[in-house]
Image (cartoon, rainbow, N blue to C red; front, side):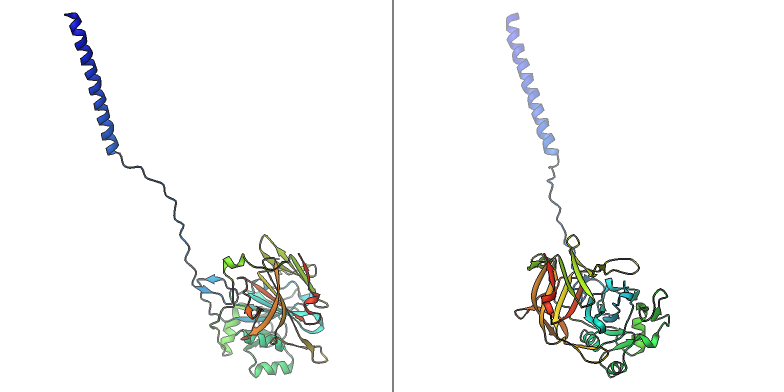
Amino acid sequence: MRKSIIPMLSMLFLFLLLLMGACSNDEQVEQEATQEPEQTQSEPVEQEEPELPNVYPLTGERTEQSVDNRIVAVMVNNHPKARPQTGLSQADIVFEILAEGNITRFMALYQSEQPEQVGPVRSARPYYFNTADDYGALYIHHGAATFIENMLKDGAADYINGSYYDDDGHLFERADFRRAPHNSYLQFGAVYEVAEEKGYETTAEYEPLPFLDEQDTKDITGSTATEVSFNYTSTPVRYVYDSEAEKYHRYNGQEQTAELDTEEPIELDNVFIIATHHEVVDSAGRREVDLSSGGNAYLLQKGKVQKIQWENRDGRLLPVRDGEVVKFVPGKTWINVIPESPGLDDVQITE
């Protein structure tokens, strides 16, 4: 009797084990069925920032601000007693051309930025105010010979002569740390107000200069140019490339061009050196400078130099190769106008 019970108990134990296993499997299936499916991790989609709607015409930089304020061209003194100057770092374009005595003078064009002060401001010259007019700018100077003043009065350009506002505390102020004629400073905030009083337009629509896009700036060709130097007889000029900032710094000889108050250096994205005919036309040493016929040029960008041509197209001085415009890098530009003799042969380039 006892022997017959043992097999029965074994079978019963086996049945219970199978039953428990089945229940366990059912619970596992039920648990898996009720679990939420595992979420797969997806890479976040990078949203492109919308392109800003407007372009500053002289820098090619985009902005959401209005870009219809009129360009203001200011004659800035470059005599050694006038250095360092004020406001040059905020100019979109600066023209550097010889005046009398083999000293250069600047004409700074402002549109995307408006400094509080600019100066010291000096007198007018025809090749400057003709260029200002070609760019659609309001021309600001301090003083002029009578025959030059008459040219402006006859409509050569919309102009404001600081001699009529000398040290008025509103449009012009004389600094007490320098002596005349190296101490007259434009108060930029009053420019458009005075211009309106003279009946001039203070807004304008401009066609932007030709600019590269960001990708194209990486493909600029040319020879390496880490330093470029030349000489306006008594005004030596150097440009030194800062590879980290990807900009050129300007020097008068060993003296770096920087802001008077902040010592902020002038940083440039384009240096455009053009050679053209210069001629002394009177006993005072005044010159005529040909800014219409075109000629040889160097263009410095991103540590590279290209030997090209320059042309005056609709009043704007542009780099050209084989008849096609070479575009500027977006940013600030300095245009050096040098005599065609010795011209580019006098420009020293260091790789």
